[in-house]
Image 1 (cartoon, rainbow, N blue to C red):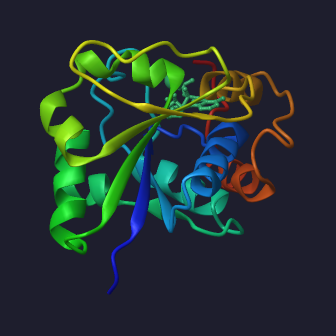
Image 2 (spheres, rainbow, N blue to C red; image 1 turned 180 degrees about the vertical axis):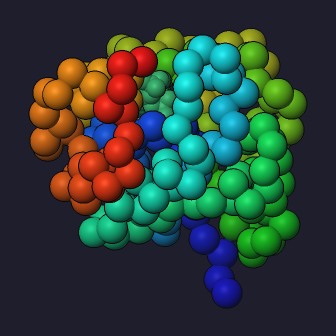
Length: 197
Ligand code: ATP
Ligand code: MG
């Protein structure tokens, strides 16, 4: 196995949408990554209690459908297999332990997620184990907070969120184009988001 440049895009993905996918493919190309792993959070501890989160295996099925025809994008179930709360520090350690010693890891974040970095569990470990890449529109993200550093990649920011998609399904509005057709089929098959939040 030769060393790889690995992008890591973590999320709740409830559901995954074109905003996530555009960011992943544009960062993949800008940084010549071999692969971008869409890492499904088992228990997104920062969101628990705020709302009901769909079962992790359902969200994984959606992400698998989302990446189906996209080169170099892969669904990653590492946090599901580990169980419990999902901490990026643990995920990066596991990827390092299972990979090539010269692998390079790039943690891909949207501007909102980047702003939350100082609140992350064991942030120092995260910073040591990867390079942080913030995908943002020009001017959308400022300098890194004290103690952090990141590189910015300019991406086409699409103003869509999982929250909006859940609301659309609950209201019977279309989510066509906002998620790949396979994701839409999977949402229907699993009966997700139909009841009001
Ligand atoms: P929710 O509405 O439930 O908060 P979300 O759409 O923000 O969901 P997450 O799973 O929370 O999706 O986000 C995972 C990652 O994707 C984060 O790094 C976030 O910044 C980024 N992201 C979310 N939406 C977009 C978007 N439209 N364009 C680019 N990046 C996005
Ligand atoms: Mg969000």
